[in-house]
Length: 465
Image 1 (cartoon, rainbow, N blue to C red):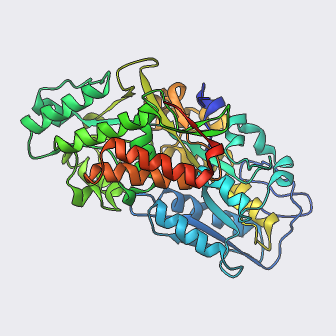
Image 2 (cartoon, rainbow, N blue to C red):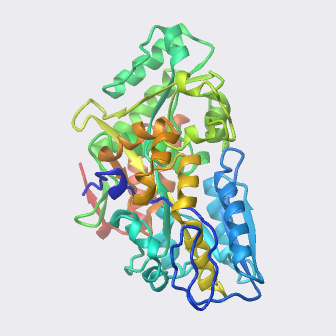
């Protein structure tokens, strides 16, 4: 069954941020906006370790943590927060987190957690349930039911608090489009329209890369979500059937999506393989190639303009005039006409934490209205706190918010199952095998079907053909 969000405030599934002053005392701690956590953890000598991602193109979380950790330590005498940034793209980040969980000495107290990893990590025993703490936190009422479900485990307990959600669409360079004779208000109605525009750019502006769609194992989940799934869900087929709780195999849309990648590659519309297989390509696309006019059309996420803002990591003062935005169309323009994918990240408590109450106080403080507003604006997140989503400061901060919020009614979420990460890896294998010419779309789809069946068992798959 298709999972969709219907409103920005009520339906987005993941946004929050670390706010200030989660000071523990007998009457409970509170954040900078006065939200009570109800915790009686108390102050004392303790160290709270926070594991999170930080890259050249993603510094907003580090900025937030630097702010709220200072506030938290000032409110908790004797408590030290040890920030442990992991400078890695998603796949390597997950690997390093898994290694940290392997020892009590390295296991973090607070974890920056991808929503699609929550169920598997909770089932593996890496995360601690947060229900008792959340019940006493005034701020929890600001989150929609969908946002609350983003951190749910298979057992029904909550293992993470949402930091904001996202959507995905198309960015195009208006200056390149003008050179190619294409309209500044371009909105493709089908996949053919995308390919036709890219072919025109290749002919008229031959010194730029016409089109980028992440399609290799090196980009990890970016290849799954920004790449393949944006195609698959535009065919009407889906990865997983929520009604039957089975994985779809033999789906015609799977072959259609791979065929699109094959066509774009064979027509010379995508980056060369040296770039296409580069682990750092997402950073290069958003921070260099697109702003510098070296690639014309990209399929990417709503967070990208955050780096282009004046205070962003890749400041691009002209972006509002140069960067056009368009909805990703369905394959042939069939209803609903457009498609998007949504994900997001959370803060979780590590199961090996010796101070889970303090860990939660830090999370609750960091996810106040004030700090959620800071993070959601600076990182171009779709807010999931009602009091942030309705704040004029949020609504006026970034001109792209209105467009990407408009994609919420046509968005889909990745299957939130413990085995999704393994399925995602097989998607990347299939896409890359077609991208590199090692397999036809039909052969790659068959290999995917076989791999999924071996991973989850034949009784948990169904033929969608």
